[in-house]
Image 1 (tube, rainbow, N blue to C red):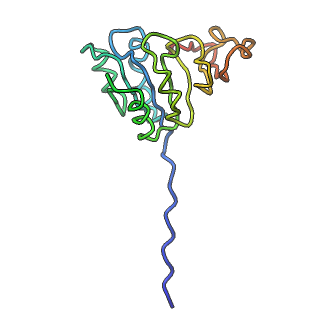
Image 2: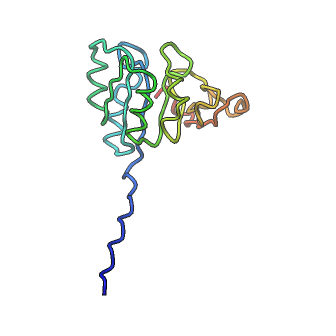
Image 3: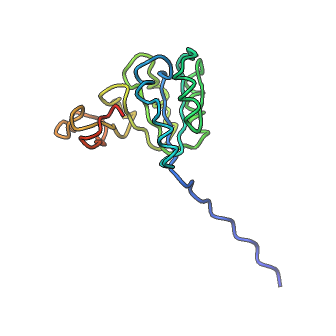
Length: 168
């Protein structure tokens, strides 16, 4: 009698969510000051597997050095075309893309329009959403994005507790 063929192994989900961050501000910039240390804390807790796609200038500052070492997956993309940046996010297979610029200088809203990740969040760089269906959710707090103003946002509000501000 023929031997049974082996059944394919089911794909196991990664042990932690893969979250990617997209910004041009890993240099001498207020955003870098705010996120410095964040990835190290995430890593020590095992909360997420973090990717950071940095398409801004590398000014050789301590921020570039520290942040690039503390995040699990550092992706310097300075000068990369929009399609290449979106392809890098997609190729890494991340679950969530967090846009840290929205409508500020050097934004990458065109990358979001290419839908490189299943879930796209807006957080930090701009105290409002991206609009235009680019992000499903907006991370905020009850002060910056009050729940009673939810109807004014294109995104669903994900509010941090009052004891934590949206700026880490």
